[in-house]
Amino acid sequence: MPKQKIRTRFAPSPSGLLHLGHAYSALFAEKEAKDGDGTLLLRFEDIDRERCDPKYEKQIEEDLSWLNIKWEDSPRRQSEHLTDYSAALKKLETLNIIYPCFLSRRELNDALSAPHNIPTQTNDIMPLNTDQYLSETERERRIKKEEPFALRLRMTTALKMVGPLYWHDIDKGPQIARPEIFGDAVIARKDIPTSYHLSVVVDDAIQKVTTVTRGNDLFEATHLHRLLQELLGLHVPLYKHHKILIDNNGERMAKRDKSITLQSLRLSGKKPADIYKMIGFTR
Image (cartoon, rainbow, N blue to C red; front, side, top):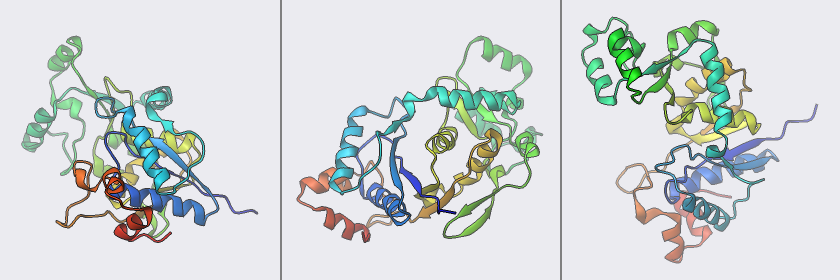
């Protein structure tokens, strides 16, 4: 039986310029695709329309091309596929495991700081059953006022619908999925019918991604993604996580640090080979 060819993706958010950390992630994904005689896809995670700007998409493509990174097909833009996420959300709603949470972040933090007043709170880290934090009268009032809300996944109910879940990290081996560490995770909002977690599992399924490559900072997120895949009946890819680059101060490289953008490095005279050396990557 022929070996399945790898399909992976680089999925930046076009909310700023790429930095060295992005370069490492993109090269890591491309190497995984090449080593498996496979395909690299480019995806723009742009569901946050307030922070994302199309002007950054062009710059991202220019930066990747400058690094000699090649991808297949046109980039997938999440903002153009909201109906895909709405369909997935509707499926979760039919399972009766989604509920609206009207609490603001401050209200939620205040509630969690006094757990003795919340009999439904059984997770020391993340919230559960936040719709029960308000009285029925107060919930009705906020619904009538059409106040903003988040749609949360009722974790305890969702877990009862599935058996033990596992996922496979190529470097670390089989992993027991622990989605409960997220509590009742936010799956969508009133103004945006999706979230990072919902969008990414839907996108990976639609694009037939076989191997998800991403930073170690998203390792734990895979636990929740595995649950969503099971609930939605989606294909489960393999996962491979890479190190996170840090700067000279020992802090994670971020978009807010303008000095390390690929654009600024290129304008200063750096060549692609210099970038590979700076991030310790061998092509």
